Length: 162
Length: 161
Image (cartoon, rainbow over all chains, first blue to last red; front, side, top):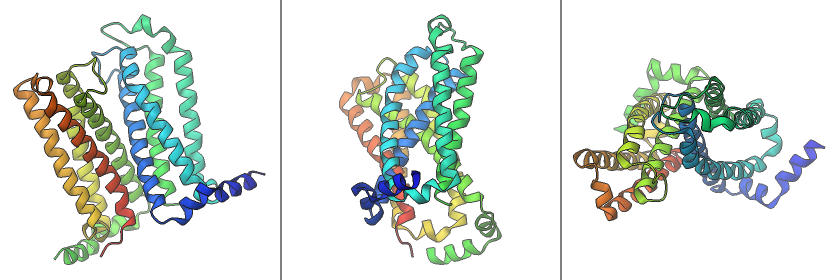
């Protein structure tokens, strides 16, 4: 069942095009790298703020309002280009453990983000006054996120060597 | 000349170690990419602020103080990790036209960043007063940094030698 879906993905016009065209894969991959460095870099800006290690004079609310819309645009681009790259050899990629681990880490990043937004971030107005000292739950969310995203980069790079 | 340098580098013990230990190149590349994330995001924030598209709630000197130290530190990490990758596979980079394009763009990008910092230090309102220069510097710089990231990935796809 899953194998049939993966094969269908490879047979799609875009899957075929990325696989067969010599310059399409590196071009899409370059856009993927550009998008992912912006995702990781902008998330690091927020994580370092939550950890109280950078941007200390700015409120968390204002910082996230400025940064996170760009993060989502870059994430959308990374997801689209990633799907295109995956479709070119879906069966092969899905069998690489580094790829599977990367997808699990992305899910963990989403869960960590969800817990933060439903938890510590709901009371942001209370702790977001100068000098801002994020509560332990917020620091934890920032630290975990930092670790997860560096791992995602490592696993993604490793897929290319598998 | 460069060909001989590549042959000599590839035969050194250090180069052989980098090639033989399977995790060295992917790990160094990961450090390289995370550092690129820091530089690219910081430069994108500063450049978009210069152009006037993003971050207007913050003053330019505040933004420069927040991001430029990270840029320079990460650039040093990039030069070190990049050097390790070159020693590991000298011909892949040093005999590659795209690699030298990337290095030229890097030199231009760093020169523009230094210019931005230098003018801001001399006069904190320089870029707010000279809007045309600010928009020009911000947009050219952004294109250059995007070009550096793109060229970096293309090195792997262009035949060398």
